Image (cartoon, rainbow, N blue to C red; front, side):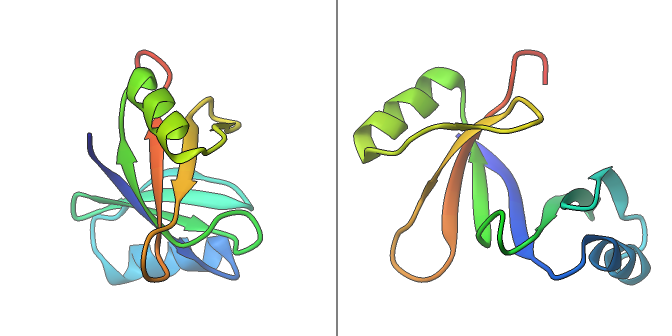
Length: 107
C-alpha cells in the first residue's frame, strides 16, 4: 500500500485548478474536466472533486487482490470509475474518508 492522492471538495473545478497553479509554482495538471481534476503540486497529487460526486478523502493505492481482500473484510462494494480505476471508500473516526484504489495494469 502506498499514498496516492488527497481529494478536496470544491464548488468549481476550473477555479480550484487555476488557484492551485497560481499559488504553487510548478503545479502540473494531470487531468481536468468539468467534474474533477488531478494535479501534481510539489510532488503531492491533489484531486479536486465536486461535493455531490466524492467525499473529501485520502487515497491509498493497492493492487487488485488487496482491494478485493479489503472490500470483503469491510463489507464494501467496489466501484469502477470512468478512468478504469476501482476503489472503495472507508470511513473511520473523524470526517475524512479513506479511499483504497487500484489502477488497471500498466498505470
